[in-house]
Image 1 (cartoon, one colour):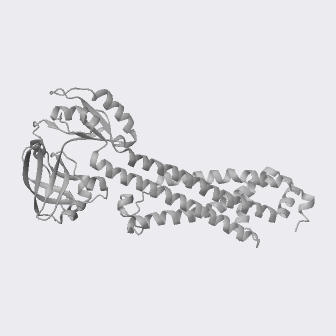
Image 2: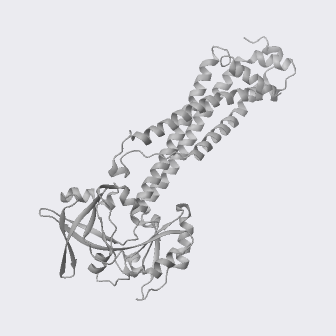
Length: 415
């Protein structure tokens, strides 16, 4: 039989130690552990949800990797590159690539009877992954765009629709200026999306790939580039090296050089900001673990002082210092266990409540989302629990050595 564990169970089961003074200390220690763990769980779940939500929105517009003309990356121009079936098949065959799609850009002006607005038309083909836009459609739909005919269909953002005062089904004129020549197209709005990424919502309108190719006077096999989705975002740097070795500096049929760029490098300000959130999480975790450790140390010292007589009796009966220390460490683990149970219930409960109701709102112009996103990562929550328990127990080892200085002859007369 494990004697320290047995005594600790009896102490914990005996009305939390039985002493009037120890009850508040135990409650404070329990609350400290519960609050610390709840804050850690909420912080990690919110940061994970926020990072992944914003990241997925940025990736939704530009995929993980873009293959473009080298000149386009050098001076931010719009130069064509050959992206035919063989090129797409070659890119898609690279290990780790999940999806490849073509796109073509051109600048233009949308005009109604009373307003006009400069936008960027992004032409996409039938292979375009519509999942992201479909999830953010406010009204209408995201149709399958064509690479062989001009259907004059247009998908715009809610921000653009508000500025032009238009809705799904409305028709408007699009003007494209090429030197001294002005081309006009009459287009119909088939869908309106809203992602709250202002830099994209202000500019991007989706239409047929064929229409943009014709407006740019490009060949049928030319496009602004190819958007590549990889299977694992965490391996983006590894995929970047593969593209540098297998795609970059290759020439197309017209002598243009292929070049690639990852989404993290094309949007450094957003991803740098997201990376800074990790530092905030580590600071919160350190502070909350310190809070839990401090309250547990205080509670343990109070309990030891109150149990001085019991410690003296155990020593007089031949118990070793190590056995008595283990008894009080087990007693502390029981207290921490109760606090961690409450902390998990509160922390996970708050995360579920926010996920289901979205009760905490955010300013989308600043945070890119309308509500606080949460992502409940069970393995990470388990890891937080284990880490908190281990660190708290290690912190209690040093105070437990106070037991070694208690002498049986004096302690049994201690009041």
